[in-house]
Image (cartoon, rainbow, N blue to C red; front, side, top):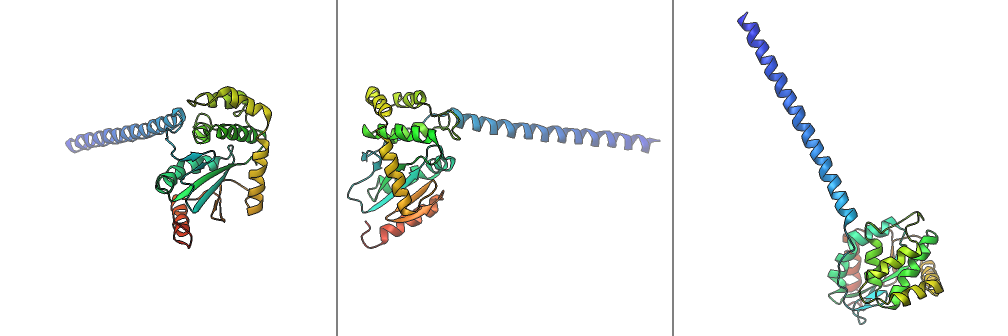
Amino acid sequence: MESSKRQARLDRRRSQQRQSQVKWLAYVAVGAVVVTVLLILAQQISGPRSTVYAQKNGMTLGDPAATVNLIEFVDFQCSFCQLAYNQTESQVIEQYVDSGQITYTYHIVAFLGDESTAAAEAAYCAADQNFFWEYHDIVFAPLNFSHGNSGGYTDSNLIAYARQINGLDIDAFTQCMASDAKLADIAAAESLAGTVGVTGTPAYLLNGSVLAGLQPIGVLQQAIEAALAAPGGN
């Protein structure tokens, strides 16, 4: 009889322990979900990158005397272009552009539709006032980036992005967009892309050699180092 009672107590204790473990695991799972959601929300509400760009000239950054030139072809509706912006661009600029070793140039194309064209026009208009790099930070910000011709890059939105840039003449910017004068710049970028065999974005042209697609930072670093080490490199 006593043995049966003792066994019953053991069974109850084990049951309580199992319940406690299940509750603890549930709390851990809920905590993990909460942390993930908070991280996503933090990314979504974060504003544009606050980089200070040195030696900028329109769509190009860096020392004009540099003999290694990195060109990136970008469509502002391209999700992989936004990934490249987030994952590799800052490191390339810090390591190779700011040190004077290379120049870095954007060519904005419009492969993905009408809103790509509108965003590209806005970027080239910002470049006219030497604010391209600040403008591309705003377009690529999580709350602003749009794809699928879903209505994110309306003229009103693109002008509102420009208003966030201190020193930019918003009247000149608006007139530039309305004129469609920058369609020629988009066509020229797409013509260069076709000439070198680029059919999608992102893609890079490094001293004449094409690197197609999203590139890990290590691959870009190796390619840039090889270009710097080649005859005529810095």
